[in-house]
Every structure is written in structure tokens, then in C-alpha cells.
Image (cartoon, rainbow, N blue to C red):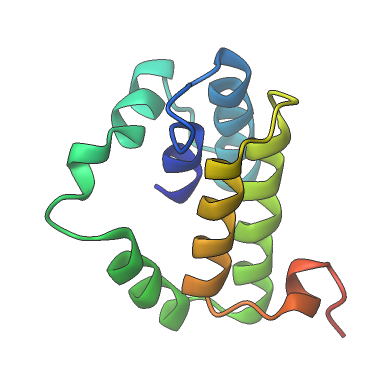
Length: 112
């Protein structure tokens, strides 16, 4: 959900972002996602019933430190995949990192 939402955070969903998400999900979970499935998950109206902040708060309680850091690293990969990083994408990244209660050291990959 977070990775798909990142692809639309700047209102421009690029094919390379969709492919990056598909590759990440396949590598991390073994699940194949269709391009349409990624686009559907990225649609903002899906988040009207549950805000992203509420979702992240719930998710961070269920993830261990390594998984939280991995989500943030993968989010960075998706955002950088189209080689253009917008202010909206940076804001989204920061919101996710804060929502997952990641420390600056964790975000920088400086975990012990």
C-alpha cells in the first residue's frame, strides 16, 4: 500500500515506478502484481476510509525494526526510480518515515 501510494504522491505515475513496485513486491514476497493492481492501490480514494497516518501507526506496531527500515529503504527506491524526485514525494517519504517512527539514523541506514 505504501509503495503504491508513493507512485502517485506527485500526481504522475510513471511506468518505471510501477515496474519498480512490481519487482520489489515479487522479490520481497514472491507475489506478482499486475500494473493495474499497482495503479488501483495508488488511487487516493481508497484511503478515504482509513487515513495513511492511521494505517502507518497500526503497521509500525506490527513491524520489527528491520522491517520498518526495509519499508523506508524500498520507498526510497520507488521514489528515485523515475529519476525525478519532487517536493511532494519528499513530503510523502517524510510522512511515512515519521508514521513508522523511524529515527534519522534508521532512515540513513545507520542501524546498529
